Image (cartoon, rainbow, N blue to C red):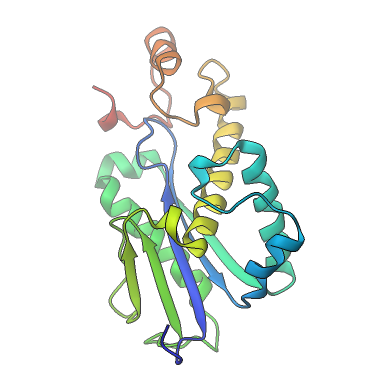
Length: 206
């Protein structure tokens, strides 16, 4: 990495494919690389894409990273865009909006002035940061290959799942706490029986 880059940022999205609920994007900034060294000491599960970790493993990492943020080793922000706006503007624009918001929140610090040359940003899949972030790299399967993207993936997934669990209390017939809004057989059967809720993505349901 370029020596002028002081911080590493990873970005990943969760919730592109569900038929209900918001999309979430996390920007995760490593301030001190001890955060990676400490995982061995803490005997944490092997770091990988959040979808390949069990619920319990994701929660162990989530709690570890929350503490690491409080101790100043990292910073992160998870931004959401609602199903209503996904229907109105499309999933691609909504992911970009959430990405821009998350990145803005973690870079609005005095030591991180534009054009953000002290940052190196790694993004998963087809994601891109705004042009003012001059040092950025998009990595296919980045959530599996780069630790900082894996961390962003975990924070986005656990945070979004918690939102869907809250919705499950509001709409108990749909099982949102089990499938997080994805189009499972049980979810489609619930829609057939009870109709659509305000958090369903109408444009995703034929």
